[in-house]
Image (cartoon, rainbow, N blue to C red; front, side, top):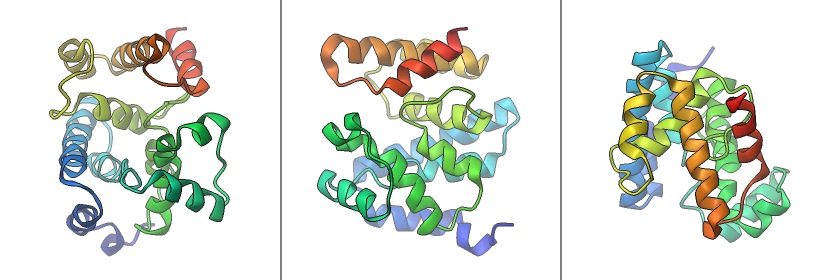
Amino acid sequence: MQNKKDLDIGKIRKSLKKTMDSKRYEHTLGVEYTAAALAMCHGGSITEAQLAGLLHDCAKCITNEKKISLCEKYKIEISEVERRNPFLLHSKLGAFLAEKKYHVQNQDIINAIRNHTTGRPEMSLLEKIVFIADYIEPGRKQAPNLETIRKIAFEDIDSALVLILKDTLTYLKNGQGELDPMTEQTYQYYIK
């Protein structure tokens, strides 16, 4: 059972505001809001969606060098792709910080934070909600097919997930970044 005072959403917001730049903080609030709305729509826990949305990027503003050193210090596995692109480590490190710094004990929230960038096969509803909310939150402006995905996300969560994965893979395969194999595995799982 979670201790209520450890997971005071207002206190977490204040803490994050101190550790994030203003653009990242606004994005975080957008993901919290969107995750809560998706949870309402699809029958998920609103509170869990808010917490996972708030904490999904809690390690994003840590420097790449420090991300690597913290992962090494706390024995968090670093793949070759992550070592070459340490900004990707914010998901794993964020899941660790959610547990250790913010006292999150709910494994579904921790998994939603850990998997919000690449996804994974057999995602829980909460994992899907945070993955999608990160992509469609109101502050996002440039993603392809954004308006279509925003509409579909509230109608058919799995279809929205597939569209986001497809657009992400297209973007990465067109030379806009290195592909984490988990994104491809997640896409292949959900198109079947």
